[in-house]
Image 1 (cartoon, rainbow, N blue to C red):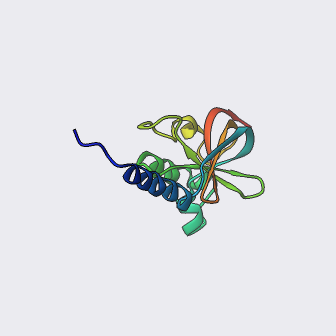
Image 2 (cartoon, rainbow, N blue to C red; image 1 turned 30 degrees about the vertical axis):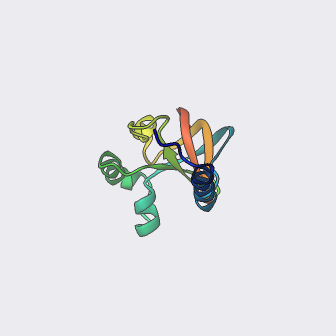
Image 3 (tube, rainbow, N blue to C red; image 1 turned 90 degrees about the vertical axis):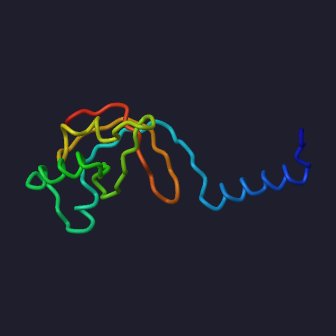
Length: 124
């Protein structure tokens, strides 16, 4: 059996540490409550499409696999992440697309973006 040298193991650990530093630190914050509109961020950002008249288009995009987001009253956008892998992150908000809701969940920040993992949704 071949045993890896200490320098090889230290080299691999140093590489992994530098990789995690280079791509930013991920941290979960406390549970939050946000009141905002469920939006289709691609159409909003690229074509300024929003509101009830855009609802059907946003639903089509969500059903095609695009992630929806929550935009709060100040215009901050929180992309939605799934609670676990291989699940649809949009599922909790599909009935509320382009409507104002209050969501409870956890914020995860990475690379300057604040994502939300939704635990509860209520119509506002």
